[in-house]
Length: 224
Length: 259
Picture 1 (cartoon, one colour):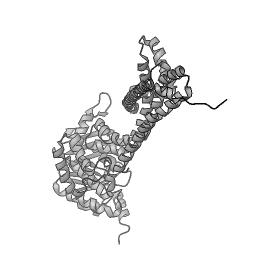
Picture 2 (picture 1 turned 90 degrees about the vertical axis):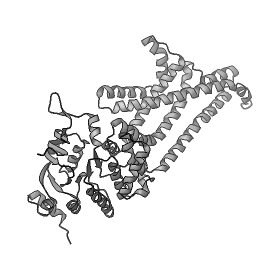
Picture 3 (picture 1 turned 90 degrees about the horizontal axis):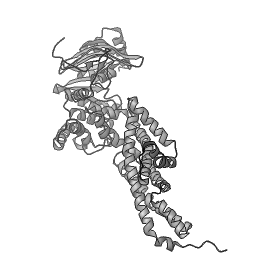
């Protein structure tokens, strides 16, 4: 028996299939990440609120989504949610909601830690000028906190990019789904999944790099 | 009790949990007065200052600004309810300088001084910048406008903080131990800046441990002990001829190393 022979040519010949998958993967990633950034902030603020009717549900939400597998969450939104509500979502919507809700739970913890890391004196200095709480948050505290949160956001972003592959179990035609399809059509799993791994690397690594550069640029401007 | 008091506190109390820090402060401040507040640590002097601009909400008692009562009587208890919008409005008229400066590290010096007028008062950028540059020049830092705070010495940072407070053109300035976290050689420049302002007729309250400065700065000195005003009078009366025991004991600790 000879060693494995490679036939990348045939996989690359079907690259348009993979490209379609890449487009959907990127779309899912960017959409879920943007939503999660916003929802995460809202959750963090709710959780820090003195009103228990806000802080308690927000805390419960975070714990539920952090302590159950994301695979279960996606499947739940696609198969269980319709039973409960009678509303059937498309696979893409179910995957988007699942990924977004999962990631926002982690994001809210990043916000919470970031906001807490800003000295009380910064709030006080803003408030002493007559700022409303929201103004002090937006003008003084968040800009400083976000700088500190960039590495953690990057981690979450990378994690989310990888999690989009789970959407393939709901038959969302993203990169992983197309790859599985291609692999069964061509009987070339080795070549197909190697190429797919390289594609994920090429998709995700620039994001990590950009975040690193952003972090460096911001920290050059002032030291704290 | 005069009707013209700019600031009046009646029966002011503040507790943190079981700890009662202010135990009934009655204070009346006329426009243009410069008041130095002395006392050993834990006497409540910083808490008193922080209650006057509502950085701490008083547990009991009333505060009047310009004769107007701040807050509303609550429904059931004698707890007073404060409206955030009202407090924010008041704080634009009462500037505060902190022990730790609390400059905004993500903004330039100029940005720090422009921030209040821009965000809170809604001033146009050009106008806010002009005001900011005027006040920076006033505290002797006109050439530092484009630096970030981390590049400045502690004394310079505190002077920027003073300019930031002044940019709001407040009627009252509160100084909460403005030189306590400075290296000794930097204290002088900050005190000189504060003394320089005292010619303007602005009402100022200053918590400090710099007795010599208090003597030259203040028109009136309060000595706090155990959450009440224990003794008050002119700088001469309190600092040179204190009548009560605690005041005398406090002052004697500062003069034990005279040479």
